[in-house]
Amino acid sequence: MAALFGKRLRRSAMTTAVAAAAVAALSASQAPGFTNTQNGGHSTADATPPPGDTATGNSPYYTALPQLNSPTVPPSTGPGGHGGTGTGASEAGIPATVLDAYKKAEAELAATKPGCNLPWQLLAAIGKVESGQARGGNVDANGTTLKPILGPPLDGNGFARITDTDNGAYDNDTTHDRAVGPMQFIPSTWEWSGRDGNGDGKKDPNNIYDAALAAGHYLCRGDRDLSQSGGLNAAILSYNHSQEYLNTVLSWLEFYRKGTHEVPDGTGVQPGDRSDGGPSPSPSPSSPGTTSPSPGTSKPPKPSKPGGSPSTDPSKPGGGGSTSPTPPTPVETVAHIEDAGTGKLAATAGDAFAERVAVRTENAAGKGVGTVKVKLTVVGDTDLAFSGGFKTVTVVTDSTGKATAPPLRAGEDTGEFTVRATVVDRKLPGLDYTATVSARQADTLTRTDDKELTCEAGGQFADPVQVRATYKDAAADGVATTATLIKSEDDATENDKGPYFKDADGKAIRTLKGLKTDGDGRLQLPRIYADDATGTFLLRINTTGGATLTIELKVTAAAATASPSASPSAT
Image (cartoon, rainbow, N blue to C red; front, side, top):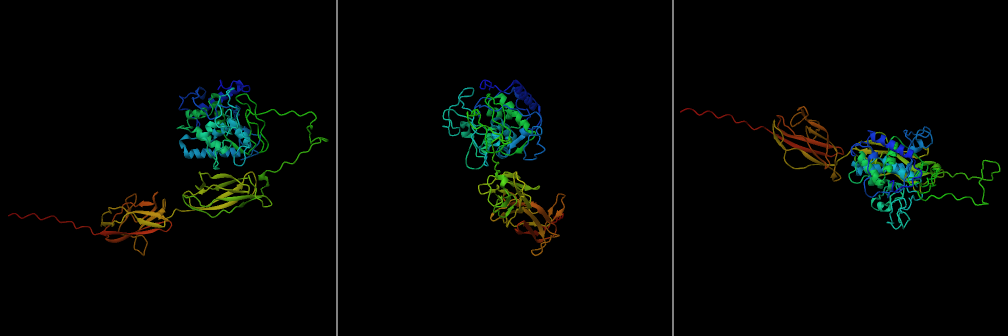
């Protein structure tokens, strides 16, 4: 990268030294994600960037480093707050939508590529050095940047030279390519690596959900394991082919691993120096809706024209100026949260709920309020969760004020559970929904064969008893089942004679509980033995859901033992 970025006017020797020190400490760490087993135990300063293309085309990045101390949440803010006090408090704050995108990308990669071990903090570290977390979180309710974030033209003037590959479709440049969006993908890379992270049917590099998921897949290519330092370093270097870039990203990764907190969109701290010595972004805006200049496109402010209106200070008498009151944000106008037609929340263990939680945020006049974040939480210790295994999800209301949660999925825990809906960044009473999970059930039980079950007294039945449970003609898996040797068709109490099972100690028992059908609804009972009683006996099998099957067991008298033949008389 030294050959590519010869204009690092702002990057001092001290900054480089701090980065090297931070990375050296990181390499020596034994924390998960930093076991140094794939590069011979050398520090990351000895790593050699691999050849090949990069995600960003080696575009400029922000070189600011985090504080060396562990970040802590400012005491005055709490979860979701933002403030300027506390060790590393401002730097550790990540805009809410951006943070949500990183965590959702981590969850999807954990499901689709579990061997990669991608931590969301790595996406946050790359997002920090590429775009300052989407310019401090200047994104709309769907996660799309309010203004495009574009790197400088890759014209070979201090950078790699990449002529236009997308006819300006992504970067509005028909001469050269530019890195695009909060994760700074060049168009040619986005074309094959782009993903739809927010489910809107589009792959937009300017959307933080799409870009974060694409970055996760890009980093997890091949058989990389990011919990090992060799795989981690290779992944980062594939994003931007620079040793200093690797050092910077690793510093932020370690910083974010120590702790972060959520801040409102549009209020995140933006980085300073750039690797090409270009202008730094303007200070973080005080409210969502304003944006900072893109890297390489900043322009100095225009000077006031002679004779133009002078600046005024309304705090001074005669200042001649006035300021308009700041209009309330949408969430500040919300007066209450209402149900929006949620049906009965009920499902069988292991199944998805047919109904989804739907809510509506309204102002004091009863009108729906859009672009408001609503948090839905599964309360308590239960394996009930939203799709993807999330116990908490955040959804955004549409223009009518309505928001619908992802589908709920029942675990194995049965009973009634609570799902709570609250408005984010607004202290209002929430809504509690009851979600009922019923035990798996079957409505039909049948034997898998029709062989007659017979045995001699004192022996054992040669053929096993196997049954299959179904529910509405489909295999009923995981259904709780009980098998009892009963006295008669009309008396279902346990018999005290005849066939029996054996427990772990070899003792006779005539009731088996805690049985469950397999994935195909099948269940094979343990071997059955017979005592000295003969006749026809009954085995009854019951399941949750009411399915019952009664099977006949026949015990015959033991065959008589032939006596030894008399010895022939001597003649």
